[in-house]
Length: 464
Image 1: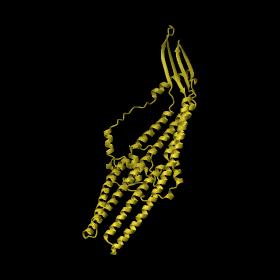
Image 2: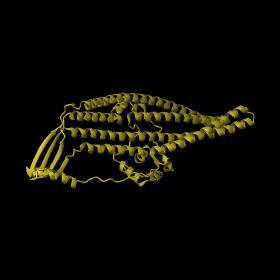
Image 3: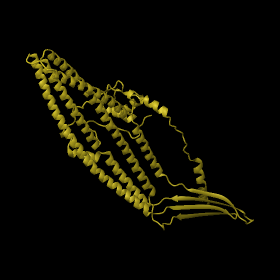
Image 4: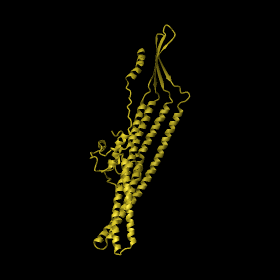
């Protein structure tokens, strides 16, 4: 027995002496350096190249000749600061598992004393309080922390999807704005030629002055539209750089591609049942809501377990009146005035709240997918009508060209037919923009790419 108590006395001293302690390492923030590092970001960064090579299944030449949505998504995953924030939050939740797994430390108390007896005036007391958790509290605490960590990882994936959504919208705007500017320039050239031909007719008295004025007015309107399109293209480029998390200068000399831009998936490939099922099973916020419910369940189990008191073992030693005295006193908190009813009731209410949130989210998902699918089908029908209109106008332009070669019509008729083709192309471009935007909303409703995969996002990945 004496050896046992001596071991109990020596154990805390050994633990305190030999256990390693964490050290503080300062990490100041230098705003000027952060700004400089941001401005220095490029698409040819060696760290970015390594990140791309590690996350693509096959070797690639980086940077490629033309950047598509998949390549740009990897750039955004590497540079976008929102993901750094989400990664930091995931690391914080992961550290919470360590905190939850920690066992309570024992308490050591020791000190000398003095009493008035002349035979043995000195005394010494030592006690060690060892808390023992009961009813599986530590296991429930760990379980709750693990569920919260899983929820934070899903929140990271949710942030990655939002980054991809903004990037898709910015790339779509960039490509379609560039195409719109090109079509407007073609219209301007055709209108300028029409003005020249109308002026020639006016000089010979074949048309009246108002006809020329109308042609010149339409040309002026197109010139103004070109200026507006140039502004939209510049704005789209800035938005694309922001979605990537790089300065605008990093996009200098870059070409962009979207192979399937003009071929959105047909209605037969996107069914109502398939979309609803994908939304209810694949949406990250649905999975995160389920994990949060599991965390609330573990929290309730922990509060129920806390109504059972922990045990405290209090071995002690005393040198008193020249004698060695050894004691061991178990202690127990008496649950007389409360049995943890308040925290249990709060935990039950939080679990019920998590359940109702999940049910409300499911209803929202169904509504969003139905709305997005309807919008996409309407936009697809509009695009199909625009395709038919463009095909008709091209046939008329070809017929006008053939008639001109045969001497059956004049040059102005051909220019007018070609202008109608350009106008039909602009209508199709607007319909294509609407269709692709509706497709993006449909992808957001299910949080799943419908026209290409989403590059992987390793939860622990970050910039060096």
